[in-house]
Image (cartoon, rainbow, N blue to C red; front, side):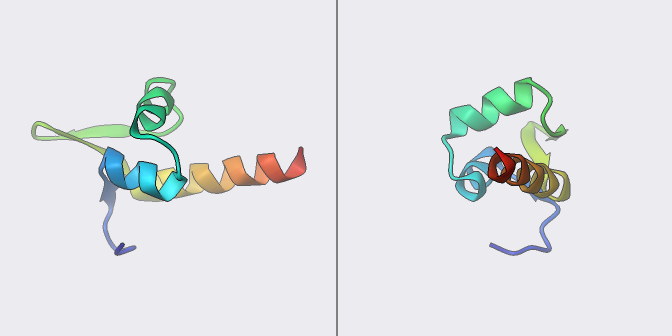
Length: 63
């Protein structure tokens, strides 16, 4: 996927995080990253999501 894209769909985010779409929904509901509405569509800010994933992976590797 193109790193220049600023926003991710939930499907793209689930692909990047290697989790189900419903897991992305749960994380979004918990406020792990910002979700924005673009018209009737819901998107995740890519930079914030990628930063959050890096942090998550770091914390996992330290356990």
